[in-house]
Image (cartoon, rainbow, N blue to C red; front, side, top):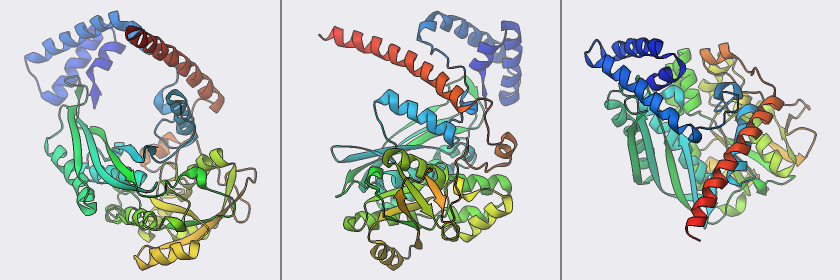
Length: 420
């Protein structure tokens, strides 16, 4: 995928014109209109500079270098700043207001060429995020963007993936939006977007701040989702993809929500894996997880675990799509899950803070990385580091937050004064 506007913004006019025409010919073939399109794009960019007051004050750190979306410490810091901008304090799977629970999950970026899988896993993820908090799903909303050269069949296959999940649960699609990425200015064959879910609280909100010392941690089998599918696709393990087309997690959430007295909190082992779950909960509660690593590994789908082991991908730092249930009634939880053919076991317990959020039973720290476990060949080449220190990222993001808040307050002040 290529951003023609981005080319016009980065290069001198003559160079930009040649480069834009080259890409237009690559995707569209030689056409009389190509030169006129290139000239129009350059004109648009020149005109847009007059609106520079509305451009952001740059932080100086790019998304990839900051770890955005890579579900490790870098991404965690960025989300802390997002929470600050939104006036929120703690990480949760989904938000709640007046017993209405909502969440949204983006299409996994590496599933763009596999739209059925992209739709299936984004829908599973967003429904899981509300159901793991105790919601009865009311419906989902869709937003999908296609680059200019995407075959329209991608849209239909994406919809098929979404509706496979919603039909299984009997959940309606409430609304949707279909657009092109960047209008006429982004060429290529990628899709992007997301799926949102809306639900109503059934009885108890299984909040992370409900986790307390002494609770047992029950975990269900992890069959993987979008991340494991991407690993299987790009490392050449197609037989593993079928394992991820499971909705055991959603069934698990429904079982616990129907029996709210047996558990106090739930979350899923997704972004950044078990390591990041422990950090996010520990920040809110100042607690530590003590984990039986063998039991944890035993609860990863055997085919998925075999692939991870062969590829030397750390299973503690990757999304395996298990459900964690924090409970004082572990026997009852396991009885209900086993009765419903959900494989699960107690993998550890919660204790007072031991100097680190998550440790194995023999005292080993399961330290988080800057990014989640590298799970594709490209991610392994890039590695698990950043050219910036954590302090650098904190400093640059704090400056960006400051300027964004100023802009927000100025516009908000004008809006309020207009209706005063």
